[in-house]
Image (cartoon, rainbow, N blue to C red; front, top):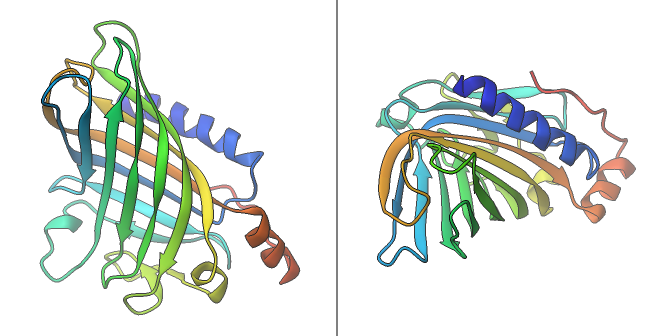
Length: 222
């Protein structure tokens, strides 16, 4: 059930991103450890990051589809720097909706990273439902070669951080589903059922640079 719901949300995000430009990177993570703290029920802080049961993948499309795999338990490997974290400040909380702004960081096994800002809205499936949805945008997305310049997963596969990726800022979209939440941001909670899916696309200036360098064929993510 949860997988089907999240897949539908991911398709909706992909459809909205299609109008914004060709995807240069997509990512999906599941079973992130999630916490939310509020002291007054009107604002709060939400965090989701890799835990013992988390897994995911990041696919780059600039030089053909190449995927960095994050297999289960990647966050518990002491020899790896691989991590993913989403942080949001929650405000304007009502019975079934809330606003959010924040940031995200995805790090590969040796320190290369993708970071950016996020903003959007949370909604509740229905009154009393234990499923929360987030839909938002990504801005100021930056790739950093703090490792070896190849964004790679735990098995060594991945994609090169090309000069185009390293020297531009990008945008995109993000969807999330959190399961098993009995309240809607009016109370603090902890869980491990959050799933994220994002698409990163060129900004107009970056798109022009990419097309000028020979163009890019849209590839559909598996």
